Image: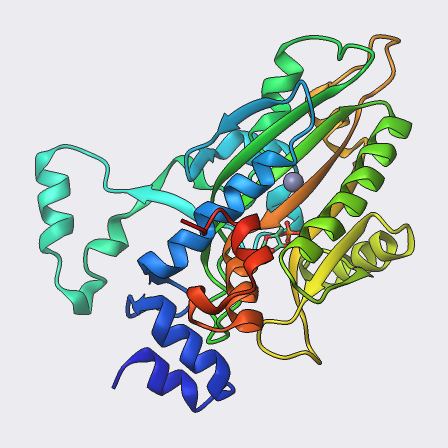
Length: 309
Ligand code: 5GP
Ligand code: ZN
């Protein structure tokens, strides 16, 4: 029995069909090998997002792991400890490592000897950029814009096709004065709606909150929602009634500025914001909307994704 058959019991046939056609199973929920058909669309999406890039944007591609200290300093550990994955390894000399490897399963196996390293799995593409920006000194008047991407990890195993533990995120990030961040976000909300239309995707914008941890987290989420600090573009993947967040538009206010000592030229704390594209979700949304046969997709959509010969 394959994943699609198992998952077909839980989710509508439509997404079971998607799963089977676009991915190969890994044996772990929310972790898939992607097929050529899926990757062609992913590449088209990346190119399309690049075509919409503004001028004077610095491009950085991050590894899927980042500095543990930097993520802690960003406040992630306190806000989302339940989603965080850390890289652990076997430490010590040959004898210690051999003993760990040979420890029987009933005594905890090798896993019992794992200890943390300096690395965590990046939970979003923009975290590594703030310390880099801060190192450069005061932010020039027009602000800084970055184009960043990485494979992200969030510890949320799920049978839902649109919730992956490992997924690709592309972001544009702005660092500068508060008004500039708002303007950046407003420009991108409009541009992103244009992209969704180019792609023939039905979409709606909605206020949202991040999945902050615990009871205190609930209060933070309410406050984030009230201040409209996070908006999401919802696009049907599993169902039209419960559309999936495929892009997000975030204002962090002075959160990262304070954490990293980011300053504007006038000495005020820099504000930051980001627009995030969930690449795997966008690709899934395209297949859910237009079907599995790329050749049958509307010509305009194929052109937008550079799929035409
Ligand atoms: P955010 O930081 O706003 O939670 O995530 C940014 C974007 O990453 C989301 O809008 C979404 O498209 C994508 N994303 C977030 N969580 C997941 C997930 O579990 N699976 C996949 N495939 N994409 C996700
Ligand atoms: Zn971000």
